[in-house]
Image (cartoon, rainbow, N blue to C red; front, side, top):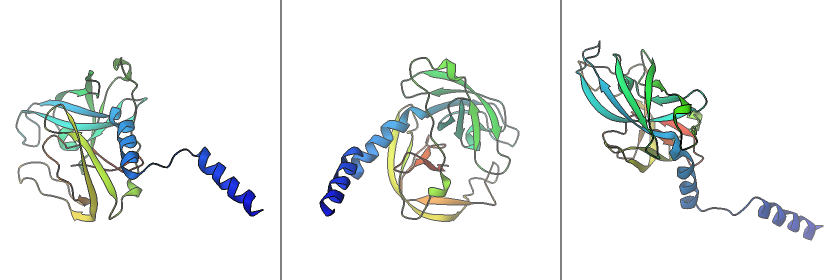
Length: 206
């Protein structure tokens, strides 16, 4: 009986495929989710809450491939009229339209027509905020103030950081907590997904 159990366990392990080390698992995860991450190019007129007219790069990621919904920050979507394009991993560019700006917290949505993406399959990243925990190994996947995607590793250090105050003359988030991570992000990374090793977004980079 014991030998039979051992053979059964060996057969089960073999059918499950090779066990990957963490580095290989992360590589497989990043390769899978990268097509869902986009660089956003946004032109702003003077907004209604005092911000200046401007042009900027940011990041977003597809959360609903069928409907063409891209999650990013509210300060990227802005409160005034914008014109914007999303640049996918294969450099295809599609027009995006602002469809939601949260009135309190720093998130919003753009929408695009999935049929306009001709040369790659549109994929999405599932949201899993309950997976966030202190000590969680993460990757922040976003652009580096240009049109190239960068991948930064880090660890969630806190889940109860006070919302940052950016300026007395512009939008500031409030009545919420932010996560803090040991990772150095740069301009253009606003709206990046914070990914766990399973490829789920546990947070949105601000």
